[in-house]
Structures are given as structure tokens and as C-alpha cells.
Image 1 (cartoon, rainbow, N blue to C red):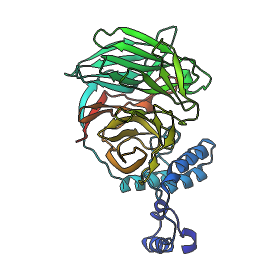
Image 2 (tube, helix red, strand yellow; image 1 turned 30 degrees about the vertical axis):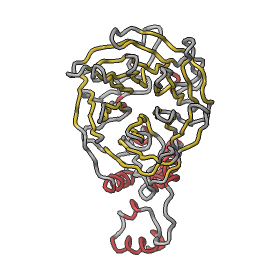
Image 3 (spheres, helix red, strand yellow; image 1 turned 90 degrees about the vertical axis):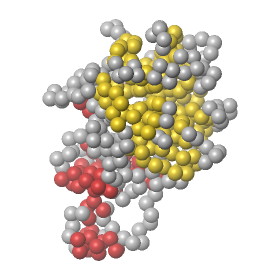
Image 4 (cartoon, rainbow, N blue to C red; image 1 turned 90 degrees about the horizontal axis):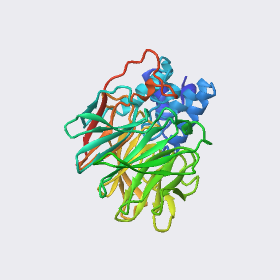
Length: 399
């Protein structure tokens, strides 16, 4: 019996007798300390095995997450949505969640009654105290400071289906920027047509449509103090920027710079961009275009952040690709080259049903609690039998 369970992952040992598990644990005392850099690759290998139909290998790899650092949780990943009746899978999830109990400090700030909105991006305007929410329905909604909801802009048309993903407010100029894509670009790397739409907030007028030749999908964006917008291309890991002399976008950094590029943050004091990639966070010097991945000295993996925001000398991120969704604060060194500390501010909200992005609201963070993304098919249609609820936006104090 001991030889069969020697150094077995912890979740599997839960199913063994207490005495046998104690012996197994003692036998593992000389096992090397798990490396945080192994966590996300193991998660992805489990996904690959599952997609190939190799459930035993997928379960072994998922079980490895119970002792690798980071508290990664596969329960909301599309690949495993129909695995919840599997007792081995249940045991793994139970162990992960028992070891990483809920942290809930937020309260519900806004509610959107359009239940099938399929929200993705969110932005906050400090002038009007209004919130803007983009959607896979191809429109942007406006939520005023009192919580009243109205349509701000319709992007998708009958002859041109488009989705709105990342949103940012340029407070200096009173503009709202939106990353707009052909939805096919998220599944077909050859589809082009991504653009950034620039609106005047006061009038709702579309000021400019910044088009690109980029294949793939723009995802998130940031606007620097000079009014230039930078957008991530998730499909090929490139970074694009607007051109001050016209409405054509230009490639700023080539494909592969940040594989899986998603969230993006701006440190105006040091003129640095931070781009979330699949495995880490890439630091970009705006003046030289030099890039390097932040050095991680913590036990939390730095990959798979959707939203990423610069706040109080560090980063705040929504990590949702390898977890159902949690809010993380990252403390950096003065040179902005190392992550010194990682703190989980929020996880396992009781009303959670799909987190995506967030927006800074002074000393707090507004984030989408329940996008209900798993209730829809890839083409945007509702899965039969799914019951939708109001869209919730939470406010999480940061100080």
C-alpha cells in the first residue's frame, strides 16, 4: 500500500486512510520544493490531454495542481464544465477550494438588467462618475452614477457583426476608447479587421475609427498621456498603436512579444507598459521598445491575467484563465523589473459566474462579477436550459 501511494499528490491522498496518508507524506519529505513556473504549463497540459480524450492523464495532471503553487482552479474552464460529476475531478476541486477559501471584500455597486448582454470590458469616467460596459452583443452601455442604465453606442450592424471587448477612458480629453473585433477572429487567426473606436463621452459621437491590417483579435487597450492608444493582439502576441497623423494603426511590437497578449497597464511616471501574457507579464519601455518578462519572486503564477491596471506603484489584475476569477495585487520593485509580493484581494465571490475585466474608481476597483459567459455558445447563442440573471458590478476597496 505504501509503495502505491508514495509521494502521491495531496488530493489523491485524501481518499486513502489517514494512517497510510501519513506514511506517504513522510516518504515525500525530501521531494524538491515545487516551482511556481510549473503551475500554468501543468494546467495547460491537463487541458490538452482532456481535449484529446485522455481523461486519466488529464486527471493526473489536474491533481498535480493540488501541490503546485498558486491555487489554480480548473472548475470554470470550458474544457471541464461537464466533468463535475466525476468523483476524481470533484476531489481535486474540493481540495483546491478547501486550501484556498473565499476572500470577499467587495459589495455590489451596480446592476444591469439586460441579462443576455454578455459583457466583456468595463471603464470608469472620473468626470461624470459613469461606468461603461462593452459587450459581445456589439454595443456599449452607460451606467450613470445613480445606477441608471442606457445604451451608449451600437457597434454591430446587420451587415457587419462586431463585438466590443476592451474599454478605456481618456480622462484628459473626455474620450471613450473601445477595442472592436470581428468575432470570428477569436477562433480563426487569419481573420482581420480589428479596430479601436474613439468616442466623445459628452455627446456620444464617434470621433474616429482607427483601423488596422492586423490579423487576429485586439483585446485590451490603454491610452497614454499624449493621447496615443496601445492595443494588445491576443491572437499573435503583438502590440499595436494609433498613429497621430491619421486613423491607421501601426504595429508597435511584433508577433510573439507577449504570447496570448491580453490585459495592458500604463505606468506614466516611468513611461512603461505592462502586457499580460499567457505565462507572465511583459514590461515594455516605451522609449526604446525594449521588453522583458517581469521576474517573479512570489508563489503565485503571473500568467493569464485578463484585466491589468496600474495602481499605487504596482499592478492590479483579474486572473481568470487558470482560475474561475480572482483579483490580485502585485507589488513591484522600484526598477519595475521584479514582482516582490502577490496578494489575492478577492476570490470565490458568492455570486460569481464569470469575471473578465475591471476599472479603477479612485481608491477602489469595479469589476464584472457574473458575465455568465458559460451560458452561451461560441457563436453567442444561449445554451438551452440556461437561466440568466442580472449583470452585477462589484466595488472592491483597494485602500
